[in-house]
Image (cartoon, rainbow, N blue to C red; front, side):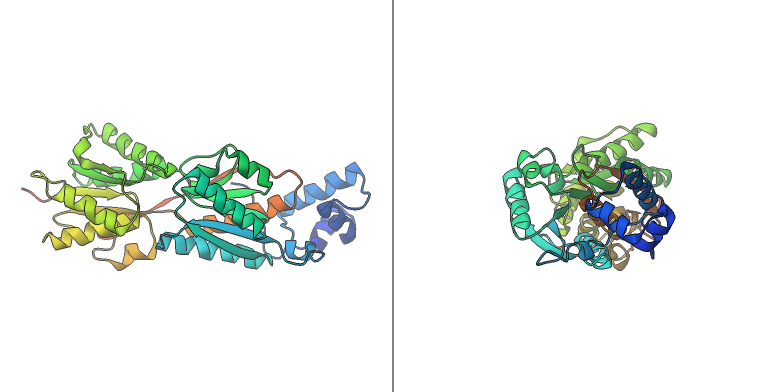
Length: 345
């Protein structure tokens, strides 16, 4: 991963490292003055070495407002979104920026483009997006014409024209599926989520890979797709899966909200968890540890990823030609009490 900015690094520290004045550093950052090519190169090298991110609020004093980052998100309020908001606010507050929000369904590219355009017209100098907006806006000519840098978090893959901050979703789902298989489960169901999210394909691929490695044939009746990532979709998926004559002994879910819905439906049907049914989640939102049984999950550091994505935007705003990057954070399997060996039938 790229080196992160270190707390306490100032423009004076950059000047000292480069052997120039603070004014020269400021001129290089702002593209002002008449610094030689060698001096510019030396200052930029010092900035990179120290991990310095300019405080754009100070640079924008000539404007009537501070530099602003726009966050584009779905109107479905979830613990995942709450973590995104906290991370974005931490980053913008740390650098003296403003954060403005725009919510909507975002079910089409036209809708996503309209919302992004509204954010820019409202004063956004950069855009932070989450799925499925990242997938819809990547490759959009209208977004290119807006001329603002864009970063996305929690996508399933890297994107050629959008900075992405994510985990390896395939590897993460492969790992947690392997743990369920190691507990003795063979009839394993999977609740995938909506296809318009790139993480859905990546996580489903990881699930299937784990089955293949264990010599378990995939059963199409045990894979539920096309629902949302929410609690109600989890309940509906569980209704379909648990009422099969040969119901699954484990249900793996592509989000904590889905898993919470599965758990609620299983309790409603009179099952004892985890003895009668193993359930796992994904994200490690606060919900995962508050239900019974507390969920074993894949943890992706959503708040930290949002913080990092906002930092990438801030850095991009200081450059005439922002770089596109793909940063992959580590995932962790958080073990709790929702996995047990399958009960004899």
